[in-house]
Image 1 (cartoon, chains in turn green, red):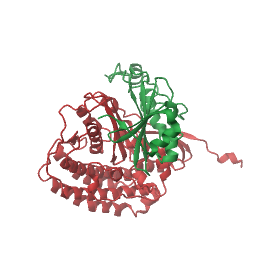
Image 2 (cartoon, chains in turn red, green):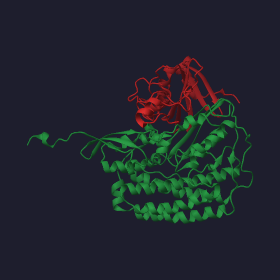
Image 3 (cartoon, one colour):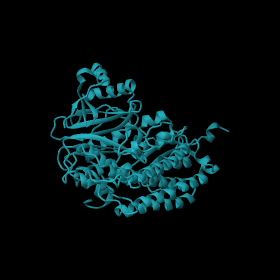
Length: 168
Length: 369
């Protein structure tokens, strides 16, 4: 089953506001998502929050596709209590690109974006506290990148802090 | 006397990661002005095991037991969420019999999780007695798990597509007996605590988080309901046949620690209500859906979430058509709810901070994954 086009009053409003900045409105397995230009994401989140009651940012996460020129998929999952509806806002960004933070729109984005930074090395511009959250602060490397093997670790850190050659 | 004489300076102290009231290895850096908390910073990650990375390196079936290790006091819920997500990608549904058993085991699990929360929350605040009582009741449920699948905590109770094991003889009677045993005990806890002046004094008006803040911070579960938002995924977007059962969504008014306590107590009663309905009419039939031996979902992605005891537990699974997930993202309720700690604790006393950490009901295994 392939994704099918998604059309509703909401997509009409978004199309009118953002035009070519949103390249795709689709439904897959009954779940709606849209793909937008990276610089349009925060305005879209803002508009959805103010005009369409999407007031709960469920999650921010990323997926790594190392062979693609735009290496990362950045995914924002939104929910609206009033509409009982979920949508995903997706964007594609190259390695090194600094997407704007969503923490000004939804406070919950603070830790969620810190986790994305920690795991993928995607830095968010304008984030109030852009530090690692799960890994130790001096750790080198971002574990969820596909070029990191599951057995890779920062041996220098392990040696300095745990006093052993390797954790493996 | 010069006015500056009574000035105090800001004091930064460290609480945890080895501290009995942080429920595991949570480290909180406190900024204090005397006894008053003027800022907190959580340092987490001590239990980080890279569950999401492990998921990318295991087949779909192999990963199911790993998710039990996140929220290890509610492992059945974790497993249910992941199985539902993969079933969604595969386009299969568990047969009705499997769904009914899933509901029973998951609701038992909710009671388990809330009981443990109650015991440790009381202990944090200084009431030692309830801990022993809740362990006694929890044992009844763990015995059912043990008889059903051999494990008590990290149960691996469900499989993608349904269940591995058929119910043992006498399952229904034992579940009913457990419900009959636990239901009056909940009233007993309430007699101990609800009107207790010390308990009320320690909880009322502490750690207030209103509905607007909850939405801003993405806080879900009993915390959101205690703030007056009548929202439960089991009702809003039913899964596993929850629409067949009658139950109420308890809500609070003030969004304080006391309301959250009341909401969780009522939720246990509602869970018992669901279990009693479900156990009466477990349909006959197969326990496994039509799932291939080798699970290879078509290319695509799906986000599926369930109402775990702590809030919205979501799985975002990306398939590239192979036997291993390309990416598994877990949206953990504990992690997201913990972020609101600073907002709730600011301006309170250090002793109240312990109550606030307890009321969020975090499990560090899930915060850190």
